Length: 111
Length: 113
Image 1 (tube, rainbow over the protein chains, first blue to last red):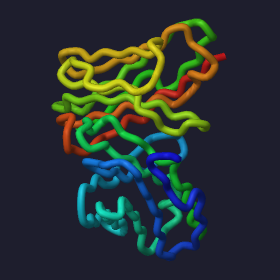
Image 2: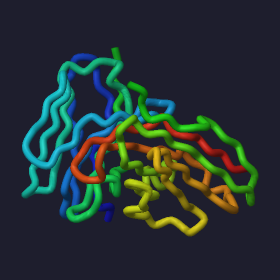
Image 3: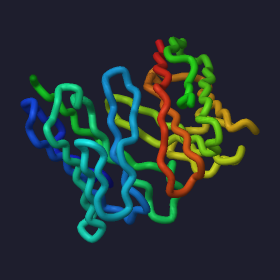
């Protein structure tokens, strides 16, 4: 079993829809990261969470430490949100760079 | 301010050769981490450097090595290349190695033929 599991693997949405991507992990963590990767490979760090909720524009990330679960929400989705979204965790007691990654969720938003 | 710069962007090497990839972090960032991304294994942690010291190493063979210079620039080296080393190699930098966000470079796409 992977230490970081994401669902769904693939997601197709219509422009304007509310989108949720889920991440579950099985290890103790010091932080959880949500990353965005566009075709071509470059990765953008969206959020780093250790508790609660963070919001940036149309993106919201939440984490429930007790349930070892995090969600990434996109409100009013747009075709430019089409990308792969990757959840990654830094293990408790480890350094932040030593990340364990999920397999990613490929999001396609249709106009 | 300039982002994380990785060079070269693309590279084609022959099996058995060695390769050196470079990563220049954001000015002031002292932590650099390297990752390998392949279609089969996804993203995997290679190593992490802070102030010229290797802090952590992922589960990769000894053919993979790296170093960090006093200006925080980092290089990784892969010797005796194998076809399976074909991947996107990403580096990320941060100010410290604990509890800080990361900025990723655009990656170096290595193809081994």
